[in-house]
Amino acid sequence: MKKISEQQRIGQQGVHLLGVRLLSVGLSFQPNGPLDAGIDGFLELRDPQSGEVRAQWITAQLKTQKEGRLTEETDETFSYICRQQDLDYWLGSNAPVVLFVARLSDEGIFWKAIHTWFSDPDRRRTRKIVFDKTTDALNEAALPGLAATVASFSAPGRIVPSMRNAETLDRNILKVAFPAKTHVVETSMSYSEIREVLVERFGSPPVDWILRGKRIYSFRDISMPPFRDVIEEGSEDTVDTLQWSESDGEVTRRHFVELLNRTLSEMVREPLAYWRGGRYLFWKLDKGKRTRSYAYRSFQKQTSRDVVKAYTRKGDERPSYFRHDAFHANFVRISGDWYLAIEPTYHFTSDGYHEFRYASDRMSGIKRLETNQSVRGHIGMWTAFLVRQPDLLRKDLLVFSALPALALPFGVPDDLWRENEEDEEKTRMERAQLELL
Image 1 (cartoon, rainbow, N blue to C red):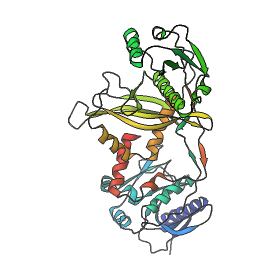
Image 2: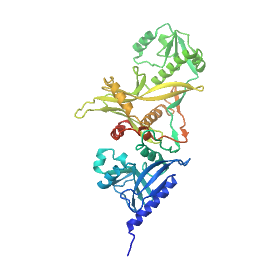
Image 3: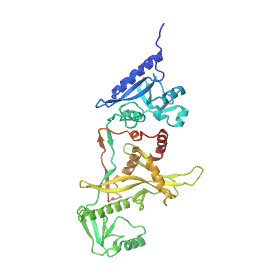
Image 4: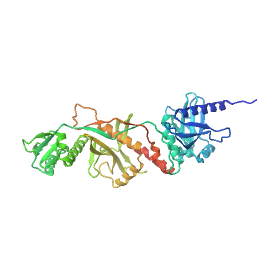
């Protein structure tokens, strides 16, 4: 008597579930016949909007479970241990292999690109795949990842069909509001003489002022201490900020930008310091500390970031150097309004205060490792830091406001920018991102 086993029935249900799911996101699945030896079928990439296909194929292996917990399942992840025979077979393929895991009870389907995951030799030794139940779910958000999987196998010059998933573009510029009036006073002193008097009498005087000719300009009232002793009595006046900033073309505009930069430096002087050599602001390290963290709400969630971090060689107790998050503040005028463009960077010190002798090497190394996601996280932190909540005890002379994200009709997966890299280099980059994110 011929029979169809329960496992055969479950497997066929999984094939139908996978086919329906792929059709729902604009792709199709072509199952193999009864002679497959470890590949259950093929799916072809297709532009969901235009319907265009270009013979870009992914081979698929499906593992189906009826119900119950998956291996090592938590709320976020589960795992799957590959048989060595299967793994050798998949890694020897001349086309990308994706492992799909389906559970019939909740119709969950998850995917992982075999060649990408096992490019790490340590993972290959364990034969273990860890699935993230959010990022590895098979839905429309998976299309860019599937495209990137094909791209890693594509010959030079071949084009992968675009996956036109809607995407938002977070901006790295903040709108700036400043006082309508700028204070101006006359002085007979030079810049160095003014600084000498202020430092002598007040220790650490404010920096939010500029000297042009024999006039001091500031958004603060400079007829009050600590400036009273360096100005000519009775010369106090105010001017319209926008009219002054445009009164002498590019020359005065450069002076105005300098005043904006100095005012920003004064606003953040407690947690940040200005590095004149690189012309950027960076996080200070508290005395006696090895790290500094900053908790904030990013573009999407509450999080925290190590904004100063110590790096120690193996076997040493004393840090070799410290990495400080930093940014260049670029004030620009666009269509009559002023904005602050945030350009993230890093500062390296030997002890939290003095510049590290190999700072340039560390900088070039970290810049090579950065991806879109790491830069986005960096910008998100600075945005949260600068867009302050109103405070009755603090009167900010500059007020920054975030701009809404731009809606784009399609996006480029970050992995596509790295499609031609060798597997070992890609693995090294992924590990290095743990230090950047």
